[in-house]
Image (cartoon, each protein chain N blue to C red):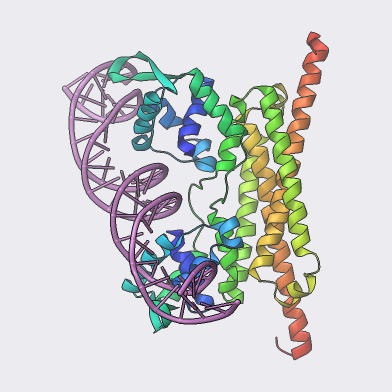
Length: 184
Length: 184
DNA sequence: TCGCTCATGTAACATGTTACATGATTAG
DNA sequence: CTAATCATGTAACATGTTACATGAGCGA
């Protein structure tokens, strides 16, 4: 039920319409954290209204409805954020790791090399985003963009290091076996 | 369609029944990478059979059917593994990061502290799993358990460092503001 | 007035979860 | 014989995606 809590979390910041919330998912939020389309958001807002977690505070042009979070909604959001994280994550990247051993060795090496290269590209992009923004960061250390960007920088760096280390281990194993068994 | 490819990847290694595959998802695979229940696996095997990606190679006691991958199945698995990773990951942890700024500062600090502590616990567990297994690793550097374990070690370490750095930044901002505005 | 963006909704389908349901084989 | 495990399946529901559908307001 993460969409429900994502919507509540966004509405904690300020009231918004379904359209506004849809736009929020089209940026970094949708790219790195959670995707959602308007076709899922509108029914979910209706459900949240029925549950008393949000309410329509104004209706504007073109049928626009502005939603605001209620006290119950704030409480549910806080509970969700503070409770222990999810059991059993679903992570397609890690799934691929588990399946690397089902590939031929050369394919596995090409895959790992691709992961390392892709990580380098992403790191360059994030460093570009962060450069020149250190001042903002000091003034608001919880700013969500920075928190997520620093997270990505560190985690993607770790992934690059992991892929390179795995490649080194494979090379070491190949050299050892070619040395002892005479294969190239 | 990751379940489909997870099943193909497992069947590349050796033929198995739906029951065997269900068991495979109950271990580390299900915990860290991808979950699936028998109620999803059996229909998916039927679909893969219809698509010519797997075939029943023997029927045993209690209606047991052993499935083996076909040439087409191998090709589809390889294509999926080697093609560029998914667009738009869904990651509940990163979603929470984006929403940290919707919390009160004290709540945010408690959350980050909890992430750092939880990361330390997980790291201890993984180090325990890895200790004494270095020899196996050298003999099979692609072994899926080790590849995923080393990945987790590095990524979770990066998460712990990130959470601690974020806490430091918050403390620094608090001290700066209490120094200039006289609040404690 | 014409095209773009704003703004909301529904329907059909795919995927994933929980619960229900059945029965065979084997070890003690 | 009886309990645990092996082994397969379906049904109802929840969640998420893609496509279909409509119309208002605004700027050129």
